[in-house]
Image (tube, rainbow, N blue to C red):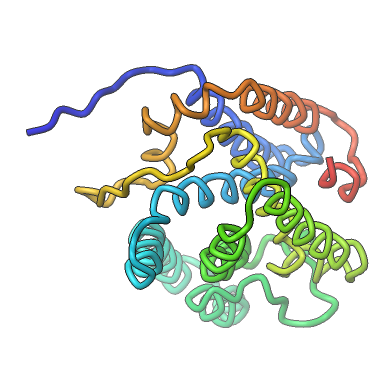
Length: 284
């Protein structure tokens, strides 16, 4: 039996720290909105980190046959996400019908259905606003909107990655930068509800994460032989504790610069007690 090494590494702690700060930001916004009015931007950090990790995962799998490349990626993503997600929905629906009043049931039946098919990011009406829903605090499935953005991204990111794989050097960076610019332009020009909820208005954040990975990974050959997982572990945890990948990333001073820059910005945004205009902060 192969022993699993539990070697601590500060660089991995840095990536975990970015994720931890994002979690604290979101929790602070939900429980103490007056003290942490910008905490909701932690979700934006999650999207950037997700782009970084998905690019890392796809890079490790790029030598697989085309069919296996797609099936392995989708299988591993959905095995990690769907069981727990549907379990949460099941318990929420059970609590809804056993604890909450009839008015809440009527309000949440449609929301539960939308959560099941990952369309919680689509408002019931054009005037419906995410922050208004939070202030009313009736919809029990409001929190599922972010996964309704991520799931469509998971469907398209292998195609985005494969196109970028055909490009070398600066051309690859230009490709991802163009994706980010087009998506950000759509985000900036769209109504607030669309800019907040649309996956196309969020692709620029995932793209930034992917660019950050390529900047950090300075090898001439990015290929790592793919090894199937023995268990259905948290993919993020697996990647952040992959010694081979982390040692390779450590070789780049740019990786350290990127991580500490993100950590500092995250801490500043989280601690500022005054609401900041979201568009420039997201751009930073």
